[in-house]
Image (cartoon, rainbow, N blue to C red; front, top):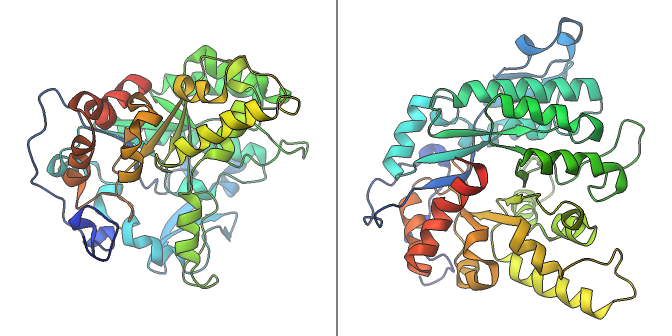
Length: 384
């Protein structure tokens, strides 16, 4: 299209999600195709108070509608930046984000069979400094999410929040997550600090019980963009565009820590999904990682059993919505390493052009590859 690099015409002028209509028509897909969004979202609502123990109810997060949007408050302090609730209402006020019957109508209209469900407001709770409060936030969230998904158990599959700040508790936390029927778990890209104030890095020795428990449980782990959101209305000029660009700029930093830090060497069964940062960052990261490993033999420690790219093709996956550049390089990424998603119902989601986005995958590669990318890989990795 003249004047834009966007290749799907319906993306032009698509606007806020709450004003979009689902794309109901598209070309018939090959027989046997199952469409799975490997990244969608729900709005949690005021789920914490009733699930918190009595001695902590005064610290339970509250979610309520005010100032034209959904606010998050903990112990009387608002965690949503001033004015951001109204801006987020552009997608958080979509009925399907919290009402399952409405959501099913949207999925049916756009031809999506199943979804992997990530949080919405919990991103503002990831960095609470009270560790008892943080634990109850995660446990209550996981319970509420399981109940949400149980309204359509064949189609909605939840992503639990895993305790990452206390590695000795990871095994028990995973047991709770699996008992709830959740298929995977999420941990933050920026993990913050341990209770004693030491900074957390996923590849250090102190985190070994964490990875051992994950590998033993065969639970895929997700990293999702969107931490520490900014207020687009009151921050510095260009804040919204800058924030989204930075967030969607790739996961090479966390991938490099896990790879060069030897996590995949020590725990070869660990499976990691990098969510919503697209595919196109992967080939460059693999090229440079292998170059570094070969060019700095006296610097790179620990010595790995394989070249860094080996761990991508054996341990890692990435999700995307629309990524023609990434799909052009799918032979360098691996068709079995890519997962399509709608990101319903965010503004960057494919809502309104989902059928076109799915068709773009089939236009870019073989039917066999496309069927893996739009659903088959997610079914395998998440055990659907």
